Image 1 (tube, rainbow, N blue to C red):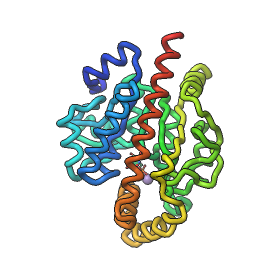
Image 2: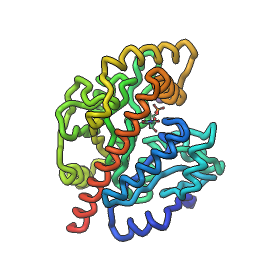
Image 3: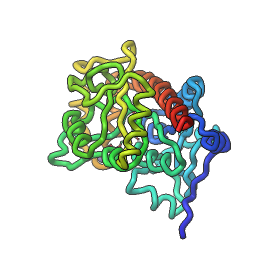
Length: 308
Ligand code: PSU
Ligand code: MN
């Protein structure tokens, strides 16, 4: 039998053994989602935010053929500065492990690794989804299927406005993924609070969100849930401001033949340039906000699991 090369940091292993609250964090946002040094600074701040809210952070990546759950400071630093790191989704994970490779985990791959480690809550910025023009390109993120299959609650600020949000919500519904808005009825659009679309579900209490994940398990349903947490008001960018810039970035991506895994990082980088860094500041603020909520959900889940 092949044994999964999975290594938990001492802190994460201890927290899980004690049934304490743990929040998984992804690494693609570090290597492909933000420029250095803001990526490193944000990764550290997100971990601090999780700790301040009473949970243990578990940043996940593949290092030299081994899944690491909970990264040491020097590993985090090396990842943040490395160039050309592989972006690992469900399809790439096994090959990377088998060949001793190193790579950053997307939402889909982070969910898989978190579930194997026994972590049920994961906080990030935004999930991947159905891209604009998907009827031609067929570009639909593997993140959506993962939410249908792997029992991890993912806290995100909705899906990025670079995506086709109505189609993204339709696919999530088809796949049977609960999409739960927090504190409002609307589905948030990453950099802005309101996508103009209603979220299918709303829950304002972390304990309810935790209970809903447990109930899915009790029903024998395999997947997780998407918790859509709107960006804090002072940090949002109006959808009208972004719309023409997104269209421009999109057109450039098409003209340059950007495809596959490269699409999301390209669009994020172009928007960062076109807004003089404003999208990056918003991105950082919403990730921190999601880390806080993730910690509260993980704490509620730990409490409920203790009771039975
Ligand atoms: N959210 C961000 N920045 C990112 C991503 C999400 O704020 O870089 C990453 C996540 O890792 C997500 C991935 O899983 O983009 C989606 O990529 P794709 O569209 O190629 O599936
Ligand atoms: Mn894609």
